[in-house]
Length: 506
Image (cartoon, rainbow, N blue to C red; front, top):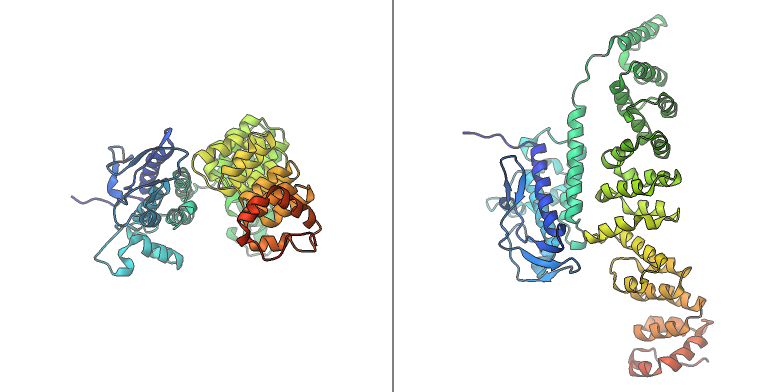
């Protein structure tokens, strides 16, 4: 009995089910489990075609959420090995992510992770597919049975996700939470393409009559335009939008505003806002395509269309979430709604511009729960940890502990933030990142010469000594006094590191 290959949507759904299982292993309990043998044969399908992760014979756990890795004998299946784990024997959740990236390629390409019947260049699926993608030959790796099925946007996001999962450095790979949400977004893109592919039914009689009138006007004026050429005339398109809206044919308005590049966006936006259609999709199309997102947000919020705001951020364009929440903050929207909106879309959001919108309004504190959630999921995004650091500093919630133990924040960014609040905290941040010039400048500016002397002696760096002992350094005398009075013994013990010049004021 023959069988039909799975459709692309079916394959995506299976990937999502498997990703959800791995996400639960990594983050679903108070302890982390690492599967250590993720591969297609360990993904089972139940009678409802729901994917389940199986075979935990090689899994490692439990480990504390605070532990980043464990050292263990290398085990797994050839073709799915995380190269970093293979070399260092340091096993992390990102090792599962790497193997899952190979699974994603198997789903897309329709071939096994390793095929020894192929030549050396093609034997390893991960190596071959990544090289093809790098050379712009993505179409050449797709399973032929999927021909014409995959929406371009979905294909691009899926390929980028697989590539990111297979990054050599574990820190550069996404977490399984991020993988799961990326797959869900890819499925939305695919389903949207299918919906858009359905042909429109014939125009209702009112619009038909209007089109005929426009054609007659065109003919009587000596013009030879056909109906298709009308679609490039902004005035004709605007009249069409008005007639369709008044006739209640919102689907027609939605399609024109989504597909046409020739209508007047400003004029159309004003009309749609004044018309107050129950369906916000046409207005969302115009504002999203032509840069009116703050105005769109203000309109939706003032008309109590909160579900449309959620739909826009979560499904239409998560990249514009910073603009949306910025306007909501300006409109004094309830904090609970803003927090819920962000948390529900967390892995789809771009962190840096989102943080910037809150920071320039002095509202970073609202992001605390969201940022802590990302941190607990294993995010190493520098912007996440920079923002967490700023919140902790402003709340005075044991900032020294964060500044000395968190490995992911940018010392220069957070140190600069500290300078106007507490220069001693700036010293801690700069010390952690060995930001020599910044630390010397802030200690000179605030006369923190004891801290400067301690840092210089601990660093024992020749270039740093040359800088602080430069005769043109107006604070040289103060530093030397502190070195001799508080760090003399330590300095004497490490004198071999110091440039060969006497330490004196002259």
